[in-house]
Length: 256
Image (cartoon, rainbow, N blue to C red; front, side):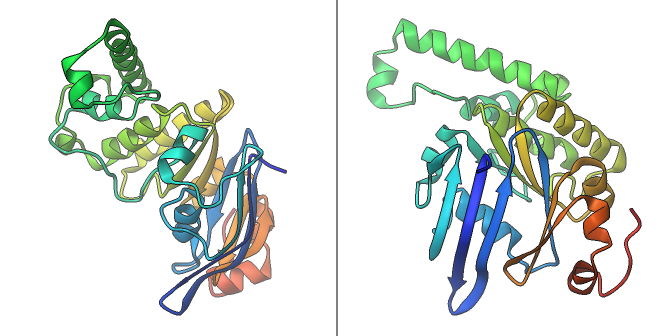
């Protein structure tokens, strides 16, 4: 069993079958690619795995525990977190504040805690701030930490998405098109960050339509089509697979 083990996952939306029995495994210490044509069900897999949408049937096991049906915050606390294709966050807050909001083991903000602010709470907030600064600098966002998130470029917003995920102390991050709309220079920087983070023990499952990035980063690569697992292997293996060519590229051969 891998770090993430998805078995026979089904999900329908108003009679339309989005997932038709998906099986996939993400092994620890890997950057696993998840590719397929539009409508294949990739983002629906992410939504079901992370608790945003409950599956109709099937199971999701993470780090040895069955997390099927768990709420998103509980799944995040377990070490599984995802990013979104369109970067989220609070545009009027600074980059630093956005990062701090996602700090693990937050003391929380209630009226009582605001009135009875303790030394332990102050110490934890200082730790979260220190961690946020370190994450921002790690992702080359140190010079914009005090800028409003709305002022960031598209690529910087993608980095902020990754930074917010890192603030949760994850074991596995699900990335939904991390370089979509990003200029090539910054896309290469994001790829370098992912490789470095993987080397430090964080695993990734990555949806991406840029095949050159999948070829560079991901092994293995999982291919979905029509809500099902179609093929899996190295990029070279799936690129040579006629089933993948038929489903994904209309028989056009890929350059590896």
